[in-house]
Image (cartoon, rainbow, N blue to C red; front, side, top):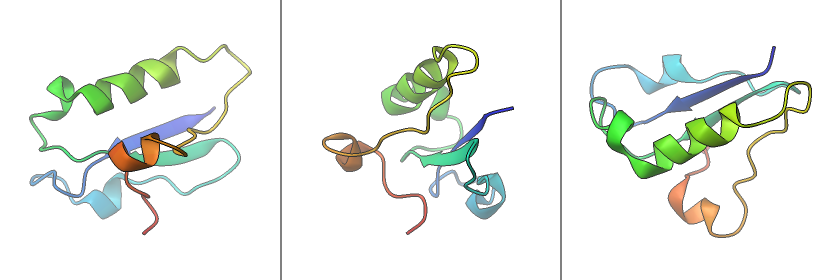
Length: 78
């Protein structure tokens, strides 16, 4: 089953290292810059969750953070 972990290093409550997925053919991690309580109201977080849920069944593709997205979504493996 495809898995995407959306996490924040600035969460303040959860240790971000424990919130990441190992990158595989069907799993990934996406980093956003947000507080723990602010994630549900943070537009980049909401956009990624909606994007991941909108993928057709059986056609999962990893998130492409190229172009302008690299300005909003930091490299989770830095």
